[in-house]
Length: 76
Image (cartoon, rainbow, N blue to C red; front, side, top):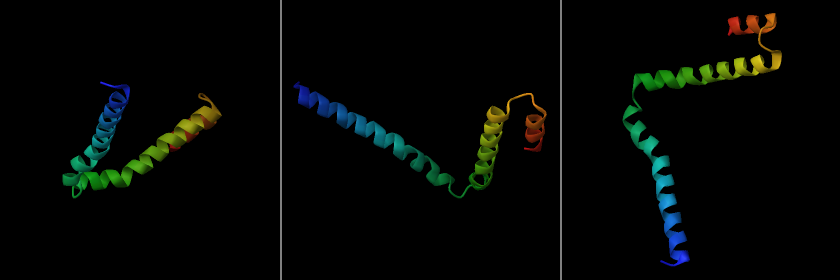
């Protein structure tokens, strides 16, 4: 097998794997579009992720163990 053919085969296989991995979530989620659980998660997940990111940022910028940090974590 020549070097060009080998490289082309590797690229085609890589493209196929990448395409399949990107398409699988859409195929799997198609039956779940009308699910009440998925609707509930789509409402609450962004808020939860934002809260986790805010607490993580405040923890690293304020410093663990301070009274302000404890107050902000208890409010979150």
